[in-house]
Length: 187
Image 1 (cartoon, one colour):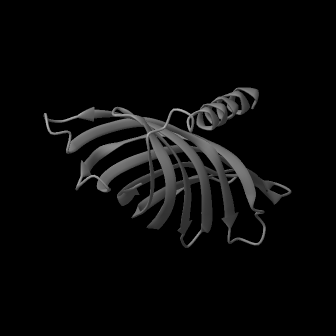
Image 2: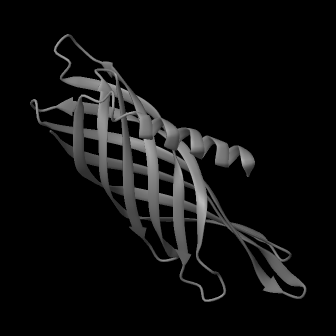
């Protein structure tokens, strides 16, 4: 757990030093399709289940320069098994595709916290560390508006003991994958 705390502290420190260097701030939103992979390891059997549903994001960030951006994201997802709220810090490196810089490919890293609430009465909700990455394509519509389509993978850290007696096990949320469409306004 100490490694995870060090990674998160490094990301937070980097985010706090960015405003002095920043040139363009942006605010935006995204909607997408999210798949969560749950696993039950028990004394009876081990099963995996994948839940799929819509996810929504609000984000704010800044462009450090033409090739780098950092941003914070609040995300929400609700499905049959449970619901999640994500608080993420991300960094993306932008690679221009063409001389006009209208289209960019981006690749980046993300770390943060997720609040997971499982609807089963025997499982409590919890705050957990998450980390992962994202990639996609961003298109600059004009000087103020941009849109992007992306894919994000998050490794989850949610795990709870379940059952009692001879029928015990562990319920966990292993990972989250998301494809999304976003629109941002630069100011």
